[in-house]
Amino acid sequence: MMKIREEGFRVVMQKELQLSREQAENFYNEHRGQPYFDELTGRMSMYADTNALQTFSHLVVEVPPPPPQPFYGPFSRTTRVSRC
Image (cartoon, rainbow, N blue to C red; front, side, top):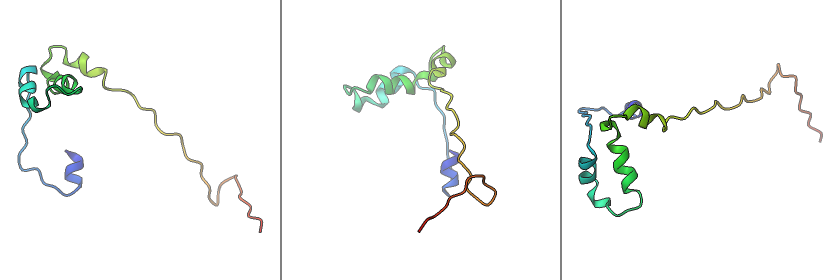
C-alpha cells in the first residue's frame, strides 16, 4: 500500500478479508486445474488457518544486506592510475 501511495495514487476504499479455503477456491475457480491452483488458494486462505503464524513463518526469510561498496574518492587509499 505504501508503494501505491508513493506513486501518487490515493486509496479511497480498502477492505481486508479472511478467506476460508473454500472461499478462495470459489474466487479463483477459473484457475482450477492449473498447477499453481493449490498453492494460490492455500496462500490466500492461510490467515484463516489456526496455525497461521507457524504457516506464515516459513515464508519469512532473513535476507542478508548487500556487501558494502568500495569508496573511490579523494579520501580513498586506492589510487587509480591512467596510463596513456
